[in-house]
Amino acid sequence: MNKKMLILLIAVVSILGVVGYCSANKNTAVEFKSAIEYKGMNLVAPKKGITANTFEALVKNNVNSISLIPYAFVNIDEATVSYNHKRQWWGESSNGIKECIRQAHKYNMKVMIKPHLWVNHDFYTGDLNFETVTEWESWESEYEKYILDYAQIAQDGKVDLFCFGTELRNPIAKRPQYWLQLVSKIKKIYTGKLTYASNWDDFDSVPFWNQMDYIGIDGYFPISDKVNPSVAEMEKGWKQHLAKMELTHKKWKKNILFTEFGYRNSDYTGLEPWKENQNTINNTAQANAYEALFKSLNKQKWYLGGFAWKWYADDYHKNKAIDFTPQDKPALSVISKWYE
Figure 1 (tube, rainbow, N blue to C red):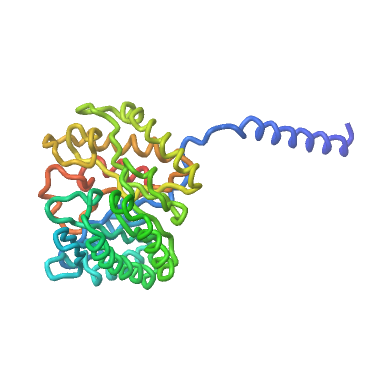
Figure 2: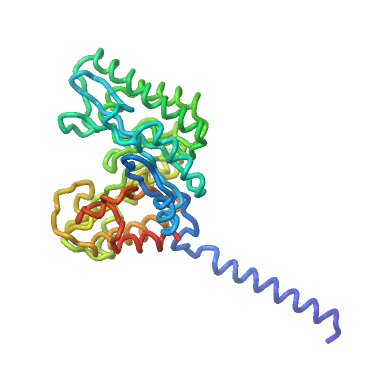
């Protein structure tokens, strides 16, 4: 065989090999995405100030983004919204939020601002309701001021993501036009990514996802009714919820972000993850629940990641035997592994 024929033969074999490899692998499922955009934590506001220790601990555990929560308080008797008052912790105030943004950016962390409401009389925000149009309009006017103030802070601070509301099912269902005009006003101020934090049981009924960059979900989905379920059992519990999210993703052609997700270190942690009514410590259940969540969600092409609930900036979390935080618990190793 002469030299030219040998070179030609090698070239043909190489091409066939590449074609064969591609043909064999083009339909191979990728089990896990190589990169989740938001490897986040919801930061519990510090009482008086923020230190480098907080961010160093987050970075050490591969967290790349934090959610900052400027709380406001709703008096349903007077249809008012108040914030930035003297009784609030520093980290919930505008000044505290601004400083936390600056500190987070020093550590190259992404930031989401996510306003929350406390409603008096132990009202759940999703059930917020008023009897008259006058009351609705009064509340809406004050809520708008609150949100637009933080939209400006988000814009000035070059915040990556602004979540303009949290679990407001009834106000949105009853007053949809108000929310559409509010979104329009926000977009005139804030030019970054925009989302809304729907509750796990109503994300498919939000009417304005087409105006958002991401579908936001507070992902406290029930995944097991057992005392101490295995990872496999909780993965099975995710299947029905994944199917519903898949349909919502396809309907709106938007990717999904978990604006919150988390589990307490207790028995029955997967039964009703949003509740705090279980008082038996179970660190294994919490760690297993996180493992099942990441194994179920990280393989979904439409899933962008999310923000675990929650991380304390102050040390008083150490006095809480049962809590959502993964700090000083086996669950933190699970999160750190998946965030790597």
